[in-house]
Length: 346
Image (cartoon, rainbow, N blue to C red; front, side, top):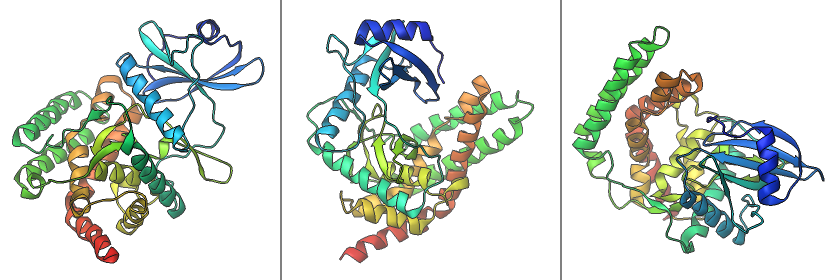
């Protein structure tokens, strides 16, 4: 959870001021990019209040409002914003943007718990979201740089970031040695990528508007174990769809722990997705390479742990290194298996 600027007294006062609601009960909910509170008013109506990190500006929040409203008009299960009394979709307090949404009753799930049914439902909604965003009328989404980390210079910059963390890890008497081993492995993998011509050949991949952070942690399920709502479109952008598919599959599959992919389950995920949105031969061929580049280049998790001591961040970083270890060995086999999908459809 990020540093708070709100307390219960302030929340009650600000919600009254901006929404004319009388709040009776406030509960803290663990969040990622925001401090999240469940509010209940004197009429027992429930809401979610989100206080964003200071790096989130009004344009980013308005983008999420635009995306959610667009998807709601298309009939997709997304949250509903509550406008302020002045019809603005947010207010600011101490330099941070705060929004209010209707509370959605339901169940959440952890990573690596998904059955086949869950995988197919997730793939379906990802395809529907991408289709629905085809005619998105605003020009407010960030655009992917598909050449990032393909050049030798980008790879060298990433290696330098990992090397800098090795120096920090040497000061950690508990986990330092394990972190150094992980970072050295990643540096070796980055050097291998630099010599691998396949990575340089990645081209003509499908880039479309998409959720940007689509995964099981963004889903609320109903009592029948069906997706009831899809949350948090603040990272929406024009991205390689293969990356969004790989990451969302990887987070969900119960057989995906320790970085592994069940390629048969990934094939099912993609086949279901392709019922609603298309992929090219290049998307399928390069999917494991695209995901490997993204995960391998990032120091996220280790950097946060070494600066704050947050063990959850360390676990996240180690998970991603295990993904790298698996993909560096199995990328060619996964690629070949995914290309077989096209032969089935001919």
